[in-house]
Image (cartoon, rainbow, N blue to C red; front, side, top):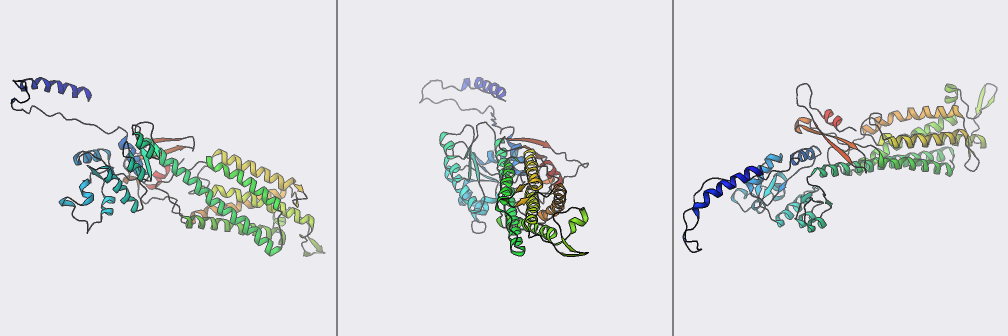
Length: 468
């Protein structure tokens, strides 16, 4: 492109020799100018700009062009980048031109929201556009190299690689390399962080409701108090395991996330309430029935008999209370930690593979909990080992308890879980395959999704493309 431009300039220069002023003074009249040709100049967008914009639109990010160039240039650039050609001059912002005299029927805020961009704008126009969009409850990000006021006003100011010092100081993010691909990485990073935070909040609410209400009901109904030291052990093992969430695999959502605390707490209450019920049911079964003894031939402590008639079960004596404490501790420890695999999932928990670190932490923590319940003899904690037979029974009961958690988790409508109603046919030819873990960075791979009759473009295809 640069070579062709240089040759054209030489040809024009040779033709302009005869157009010199004969007297060679500034007041002399010269010969008339003669049009000998046109020199087209084209400053193309970066090769990856259109691709980046398409990827961002897949992730629910809308773009508007705000440029100081002429309207025709803005429309052509918008067409090439896939941003649309519904561009307007800056005068439209104030409804100064004849075609835009419709302020009464079409408010300026809605007008800015619907167009694809503006041309011929000044810094004050950019500031006003951002302000108006923020008034419409939009989270605005602005990229630029010298518009410090606009970068400062935006929720997320992004200074490009060649930005001025003023723009860099006003921006929230400074790109160190040319191109906008880093914006996609930033979007995926932030949504991954959000998903981890949401997973933790749901888990924390569920686990708290489970432990507090289960132990409270057991204490109020049967006057049984579990030793505070055992609750401390549960808290320590749970916290060690939950810390690995910061390195867990997550699936960034397809649409911008927002905090829906009512739905999040509803999910936590449903899951925590169910686990509390199952813990109370387990305690009732081991203290008031012989179900486990009859089915699995295990003995936690002895019943008092009068011939063939069962008089009562003396679980209030010291030895029985210690073994019940061990059994109850193991059951609560298993299900409260297994809950994390449900709260981190957006579908069935066995489909979304967790990170190796999370699995390892769970296995180690539950191995420790099982050994404590089997062999622990701590008088100060009022606990005595139950043996491996009861440990196996408790693990089986916990597995049965875990199965309905997936159904309960999917039954609660959580808006933060993105289930788009549109298909791939609306997204162009590109999808995104996301892999990697925060904070080690994100590898973004653009995968061409073939549009053919052999492969239907459905929402499931898109979710598979984004699956880790």
